[in-house]
Amino acid sequence: MKSLKEKPKSISDIQSYLKQLYSSKNDARSIEYLYCYLFRNASYLSRVIGEKRDPKDNFIKTLSWLFAISNKLKVNLEDVFVRKYPNICPYCLVKPCICVKTGKKPVHYIPEWKAAEEVANFYNVAKSSVPSLGIDKAVTGINDLYPANKHIWNATGPAYQFYRILEELGEVHEAYSAFVRGDRKKEAIEDEIADIFAWLLSSWGIAHESISLQDAFISYYYKGCPVCHLNPCECADHSDRGERLVEISELISFKKKIEELCILLPEYNDKLSISVQSLNAVAESKSTVSAVRSVKQTTAVLEQVAATFKPIDSAAQSVNSLIKSIIAIAKGFSWMT
Image (cartoon, rainbow, N blue to C red; front, side, top):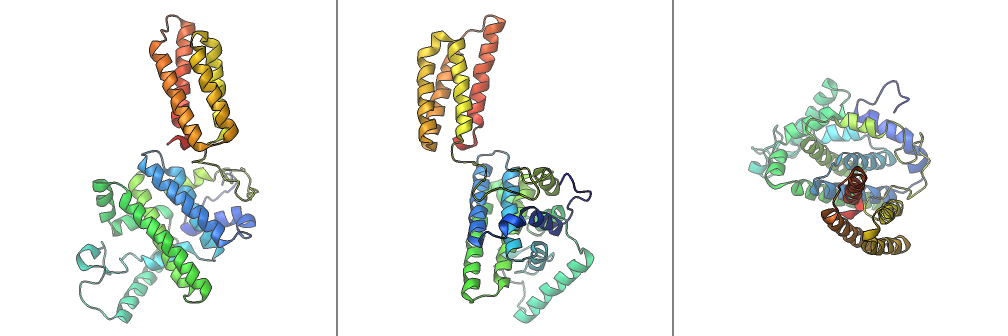
């Protein structure tokens, strides 16, 4: 987005930008390919949230794959979101939602045709008053509509939100399968996509109450594709950045730090050289399980060395700082958790 004079402001602007950035690749990919990456990134988002690490990039990646599916299906995500949630709950028909009291139905009986008309009228009002919906406004709006989401999150953690996101992911695939069979119209998919979008927006607003989602999108895509750094993207299929499989280049860099310590601390060479051998074996096998085990054992050795090593002069203090920095590197590996 660096080259853009006008940065994306609305949900549709972001969708259009991502279509331009990835259309040469995603147009040739199947819905199943895009859906797999959506599901993968949503699951990693839930794990990062649970680990209480910074989930901003995981939110952006998950939303981006949802935009990718929307583009593939020619679904205007902004429009289907407003159509489903036009400033009232589509079930109890009020704001804020009181479905917990009514059981997902209006307070008083209303014929279905009239209920559908009421939702449609609210949609028309929403579109006429705010023709272009900014993504930050959408975040605020969905949490104003469903304030209970924040209360549940604060009381019990994010598990409920991500249980609902997982449920909606399943419903998107079911709706798509029914559409392919000819049993459902595309509107069924649009309805489920709107639900996933709503739950993700709500979760962002709770996890990052004071951070602009629009700014986060711009920052993430500022230099084009965050993997190949080109616009349009030229990444090959499956050329994504790993998050949970051991990154061998990181492991090798970590091992070189240990080898450096072997030279600086010959008195600890026996312990450290065993760690180097273990890390060499992992680099060969590329096993994530072995990597986690080996790095954790190496970290324990480093902590033992740090506890017994006495930094009595500036050179020794420098070595002690190196030990601490290596331990910090090990704890920062995304695939270690």
